[in-house]
Length: 259
Image (cartoon, rainbow, N blue to C red; front, side):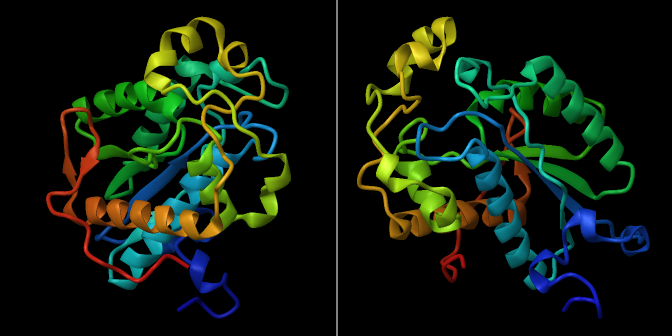
């Protein structure tokens, strides 16, 4: 339940809305930090797509765990990431790998002074190398920090059917389906060298790596449910691999669909 006069139930575990005495206890809280980006996502999706997905997955996972009695707090989202490959498109704002690295390291050091632990919930694939570096240093320092991903196995790479379906479910107001059009559909693994050397716009003029046509809110709901269930299972087990990433020791249990 929310405190009288406080925020609604669905944000009662949001760090920015809490008061410090609520966090000053012996048990501590696990802090989830959504990490996204501000970058082009084709002509039909908003620049904050990765940020919105990371924030939603962290919030929905936290709601389930809080309802089960866990102490979870969701920190404000890191909305800028390493998006240099998208900088040829207006609207993209990248802070680069070094700035992101310093931000995550100092964030982890500070939060671990009072938190039980910190989990970075990443929504942008370009952040991954830096997440690994930052978490490796923090863990080497003895701090309980790990990361997890909002990536979808088998999904298309960028602004395609996968992300479009997710946004049509989470934030339908933010999507312009009539502007959705296919981009380059070659697997990202085959394009990686050119993407790194020349940037996304040289490979796909509309910024899409995939085909968003055929996306649907129903498909997005299924994808989000799978993502949230996986992250919940990881947070229940708290098992960390050699890259500092959370993994579930057992399959995610069947749960009610995400709202």
